[in-house]
Length: 308
Image 1 (cartoon, rainbow, N blue to C red):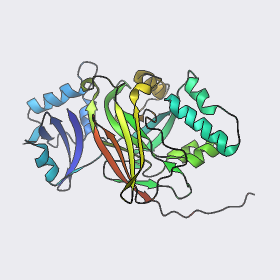
Image 2 (cartoon, rainbow, N blue to C red):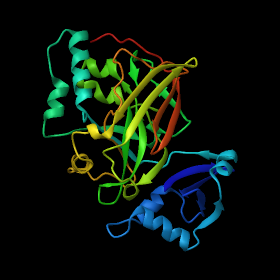
Image 3 (cartoon, helix red, strand yellow):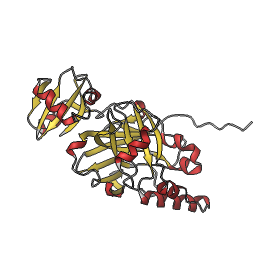
């Protein structure tokens, strides 16, 4: 079972795919957040979907994937997240590579990222609002004051009423590594700008996934038709449980229903690699499909100001 949102003749429609049948919901279900809002400890997302289908809340049933893909349905973000958050340094390889790169480039001998990895407290940071996160086949944007922006393929949690994941999807968390590595206090600028992340193409209810700690994710970047990045990772490398990540996310912090949480960099990228205009980034998983985005650059002037 997959759930998503699509655009059809100017209208946003919620859909689900069960086996090889696509069901389109009527306007009583205006968004996937509407579906999530009906879920609780007694009723899972998949049960809510089946209940709505049985009650006649769908307007159309499409028999084949080919019919859906070949028609004028444009895939949108699987959810319009009111908030986007992320947890950093949840994989040991990421901690090792980050510290190594900073120490080599800046001539330091610190273990900042290893400290975060080993520490009891998880690193939770804000990734922005709905405007900063795009969907499948939409443009991801680079900020012009960075010369080293890296893609990060990740498992993403969709947060339900109890502050726990109600569904999973794929994500790409762009990081301006030169800004982040210059100073940890610049993390927000290294992570948040318009079009700095993507999710999609669909989401899957948590109860449908047998083992969220065994999902292989691939990050592939093509430039001028040639593959320049091809990195694989598996969620088995997560140090912390998904429940623990959500615990720190919601600690004295009531996150809005339908928000998303990026769970950390599954696919580590060479720290000298930077995305460029025209690149195609695809985050792949046999479980979720392909999240594809083309890279654009914001046209924003970079000004120099003298210190007072």
